[in-house]
Length: 619
Image 1 (tube, rainbow, N blue to C red):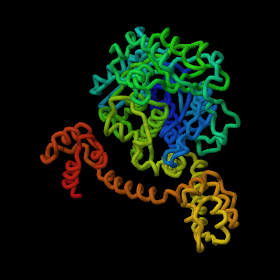
Image 2: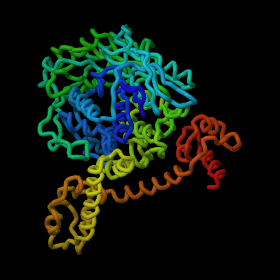
Image 3: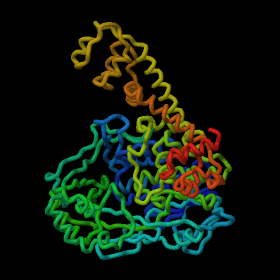
Image 4: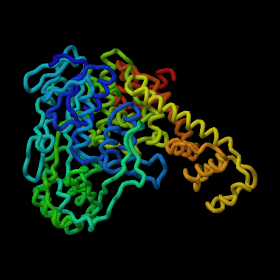
């Protein structure tokens, strides 16, 4: 057992796994400390990865060289591309996962990395010397030293679980809370707060009547997350949809007087966009029903996740209400839903690298920063792990801009705006979402991952080949000219306007009624190569059809990036600029933005405040 490491990662959830993998792959000797070796990469809530905006994040993690996409591909039981009826900026991959297989694949991956050691214990103290993190001390009294420490404690810091009037210490069912660390960090000067999350009951799938529900199958041609040659699903398991009713709501209301949320025993705010069922029927009293998604937990288990029924009501109330849902009349419950309240640290105390402002070489990632969701946690872990390795090797900070990735938006939102409720990523949070599509994450990020030593040469070469193939196809489409006599009858059949003179294939492709399959057909009629991969063809068609939107967003991004390049000295004295608004000055002094761009996004800092800063900087 070694006592000294390059990087110590505390916690082995989604953030911790990505942090450990990234730092170790780049060359650091890593110690991963977890309270339970049997719950590494545990899917604490729903067994799924991706979704709206979250799927884009998983693809970005993969493009940089992270593992969440690969692990998801190896453990998925269903795949769906969401929002296909909308524009490509909204397309979002999502998979249903085998909960146990997901965790097992992650553990195998980490154990196969010789740079990672493991220790089962609880960390109670971060060792600090001269405002630098130099290691940790565990509940067993063991001291491990390191050059950098990454905290990814999830919901375990002073965690409390609630079921009706019952309160238990813990961060997850049957797992104890972590105590002592919050108190020590507060003595170091950190600000802490409380947040709340929850989970629904798990039930026995053999007791459900699926004929009473709507089937939700996977895509006919399932996709995947990773840009590498990971397996594609050959069979899938269906999910199901059913609904609550007024009868269900009436039963749930009988437990409100014992609800820890309504009686005030839970102080922390829960996720706005994933409320508990009691919160939904209270806030949306005009709704007579709510959707319930019935999701299998794996290939070889009868356990079912009741998505949409998160609750902390008494277990008997949960059970009685479940039995009134269509298809659940004979339900057998494995365990009730519960709420968890836990400590977090407002992320405005961090830098863009996720290193803390107060203590050098100490990084926070995941729910400790006030986020919710596996994907949000995983991308933070990846960024923290990369920067922990780079800071101890005196390398330049690795920062992703808002215009480069959803994970750049997430980190910038957290440290610039902060959050008082669990932060969840949405496409609406990204002002450049036409640029940040799920299909082009490799073109945006793989070169960055390769340059820092995380993305493999194989991944980099694959991305370069894709980029070259897209360029070649775009060149072909622009050069091909079509004659009226060769295409007009086909255009008429498609309900598209005929042409009167030669027209480029490029102009035909821009028409909204011409889809990807049509482009493939047209290319074959003019003897162009038909050996074009689906992803290359899709990418090229998107580039053509959305050329104007993409061009506009690139122009806006360039303008923003010019402000991002204007750095502000961290020791800058804002009190010297008397023309700044009072609120603007106070916010700038507290948050210490690194650039003019970041300063412009702080709530309370006005455009005139930014103009004053620009004038002072000679811009």
